[in-house]
Length: 256
Image (tube, rainbow, N blue to C red; front, side):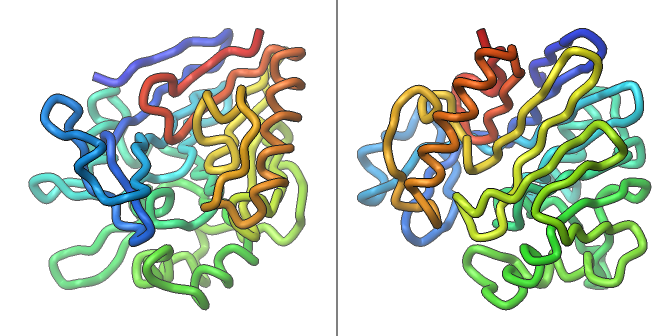
């Protein structure tokens, strides 16, 4: 059962897809901490969680990124996780996409028995940076699964963002950082006096907010490091709720 956090009017639900190791091959390999040893994995392997988030506000049921898109018994794991929270795929009203790496965008669509792709959330509006989509389609495998995300193009349910910074529906703020990847964006969701911050792969784990280091897997590691420091200071001052997509132990933290 997923953990649920209620913060004033907003409800936060991390949708864990499990723990994985990933190395320079960019292949996500499931990791069972009861049986597996990190040292036995290939050199340079990182241990990460993969967990999209639901944020329920007065206006919307928001989905923040879409996980790996794994199927279990002919059902997408993300759909199963939602149903455990009594949320149907059709209940999602907005899908906010930080970027289109396969561990964040794998659940955008699913393939039917005839080999046709369909959006996984039939009533949602998907928000994605136009430049990110163009980059993903031109770059391709192994970071991007172009066949799965191509359904976004010329789709009436998709809003392609063309500004580096802006607002969605008056209460969701987005900004391109160009830190983890060239067109990566982060989100602030503000309702009343509360702010939820989703930094995705710019701010993937709690420990990275507290310690200064440059990650080799970031497009601009120094910028990512400085942004994490800036966000952590500002968020602690203002009491943001931080969502950490890849944190094994601490998916949600309230700034002090």
